Amino acid sequence: MADHDTLPIPGTTLFDGDAAAKGYALNALCYSFNDAANRQAFLDDEDAYCARFDLTPVQRKAVADRDVLGMIAAGGNIYYLAKLAGIFGLNVQDVGALQTGKTVAEFKQMLLDQGKDQAHG
Amino acid sequence: MAEVVGAYFTSHVPAIGGAIHRGDQQTPYWKPFFDGFLRVHEWLAEIKPDVAVVFNNDHGLNFFLDCLPTFAVGAAAEYHNADEGWGLPLYKSFAGHPALSWHIIEQLVGDEFDPATCQKMKVDHALSIPFELAWPDVDAWPVKIVPVAINTVQHPLPSAKRCLALGRSIHRALASWQGDERIVVIGTGGLSHQLDGARAGFMNPEYDRFCLDNLASDPDALTHHSIHDIVRLSGTQGVEVLNWIAARGALGPTAREVHRNYHIPISNTAAATLLLDPV
Image (cartoon, rainbow over all chains, first blue to last red; front, side, top):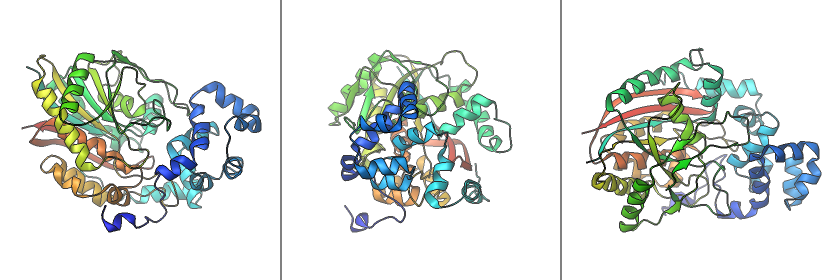
């Protein structure tokens, strides 16, 4: 591994073994939302549903607060967290806005601005 | 003898599936992306593949963190999509090609790769959307598939160098396959994008252009970056370029670019489509 491979990447958390171990229960909760009945059970009684998954208090609070950066810090992986976000009808622009402190309109404009004069092919 | 007739690469952003479902292909937001597929349709009609080897990554449909293989080769007679949790339409099933799957697995293990082998494997939007884009409006897919899943979720990820070598091993398998199939290789995902963290929304046209410019002529150039480099340059989900690199290896030693389309943004992603012919 090159030395620079240990340098942090700003605004970025690598989902590595430490994160995967720490986040296992939270990601298991989110993975369960592939099943429509589980999504409904979560909506019907969030506390009771989350109690099945042995979340840490920090993870449970991050879910309750819909705090995406908090969930990532607690070991959440975005591919699984997206399934939780989907329950609330949130797409990846909504989730991007939540994480960057922008409005959804501002976040979408930031994406559009990156495309100026970049098309080729 | 079987023949590798080309390679097709495309982004697989879930929102593309929503756009297809709604019929939004010609709206201003989507048109620059979908128009890039007119040439793909022509090209597929020319090369007439009947098998596809598809390099893709699971997003938490088939694999969870309880057992997450670095490389997994499907060896099923059929593959099904399922509910991914956020309201995508359910996609058509695929016919597999188990005999070719096992031939590929034999070659890979013979070449000292150690893939997981999956006689059951659900396939998600990473596989279905590239097919929806390539063959719109068909009732059944015109090709059988061998899916190869690469872990792009949980680090450590396999290096770009390792993925290219994996693809090259699969090319050797295809070159020695005694059937008469016409085989297309497909790489899905990318290009640069990052969904998570304070850097969400990051894209990098410069790095994407480097990848697109080198994939045909010098794919080894893409292997000089470590995974950490690729995350820095391409975003946490931009690492899906590993699927492209592996597919490039499977195409064979030399290749020629036929078509490319690059457009920012599709959802949070720098979207790209590329066709390569073997030379």
